[in-house]
Amino acid sequence: MRLPHAFTRALAGDQRGATIVEFALVAPTLVLLLAGVFELGHTMYVQSIVNGAIQEAGRDSTVENAQLDKIEAQVRKRVGPIAPGAEFVFRRAFHRDYALIDRLEPFTDVDGDGRCSNGDPFEDLNGNGIRDRTQGRDGQGDARDVVVFEVAVTYDRMLPMPSLSGWSDDNTVSGRTFLRNQPFRQQDRQSAVENCEGPGVDEPGNGKDPLRKRGNSKKPKPPGPPGLPGNGNGNGNGNGDDDDDDD
Image: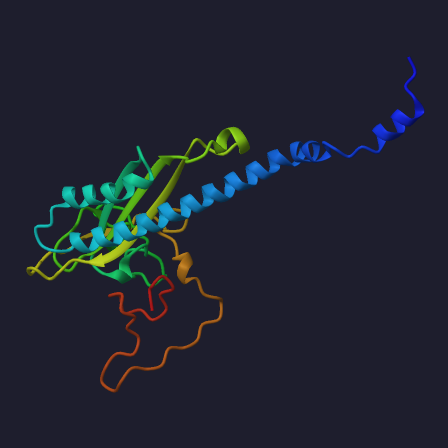
């Protein structure tokens, strides 16, 4: 049956229902975009709560006889309502000073080659028998120790992002704070002295500190005050040409 010409012309010019078709085309992209914005906003909110909680917990931990279990429970209590069912991993590492955090352990350059090698003694701040970057010893430490307090929070995502965009099922945010313990008593603790083995070239942790790498040209250091040695470098080896030392 052939439709009347007037009917087909009216049907071709009818725009009713076009909006529904256009919305069906753009709806998946719009929903994914909105879900991503909400998920990122929730992540930023959780991150801000974790940062505040870890800083407060870190301050409470620096006093003498601090009850660390109860302090960590307070962090869980603050973060729990916005990240239900979250898993918490805490880590405390203490250092003797701020300047030693994540730096190569100081050594005495006996042979003057600018490297910790061939039996040069070094201060084993980690107590692991290897010269490496000082990640600190586990625990809260003692009076006047610098503590790096970290927490990692893993929780299920608020929206079904994995099925929409291929994201992971959970999300992890972390917080860190640096604080010094209160001087509640005197401490007398010394680090062990170890010796570097081998040439100190290919062994990890025994080479030059990449954070303190300098160019080939060296500027002469100004002489010290009259009557005092002018080549001390503050690392206990008295060698002004040590590239591995911290200025």
